[in-house]
Image (cartoon, rainbow, N blue to C red):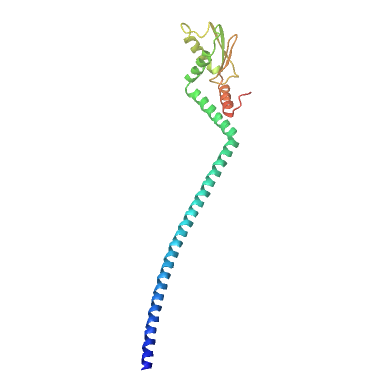
Length: 196
């Protein structure tokens, strides 16, 4: 009987130990599951941070490259500014010369503007390209009467003046309305060089 009692006690202790072991095992499994879940959450958070950091780093690198490219563009423009201006003025001159060939009324407008700048209206001499003499004489003749250019106007052919331009002189004034003179003024203004 003693043995039977001891067996019962041992069995009871064994069952109690087994139950405790099962509880410990279950608790350990729960803790392991919780640790795994937390690790997954942390891993996901780290991945998100890495993606965000990578994205932000990529954006920072892209912004840096854009700024560098912009600075390079500005340097190139500054380096070739004079050449760009010269080319632009040269193209403008070619276009103006072609327009004068196609539309001779432009010559009259240039003459009228130049003549309007003269205040001394006693004796005015208008120097023009030989091809523009007739246009200038017609303009002068058309203004005789109520809206006279001057008391006396002479139109003089001058081979040194390109078509479409003119130089007007009075006793006290000189107006250089040659196309190349006007384009030189534009060129100097664009280059920031007002001195001759």
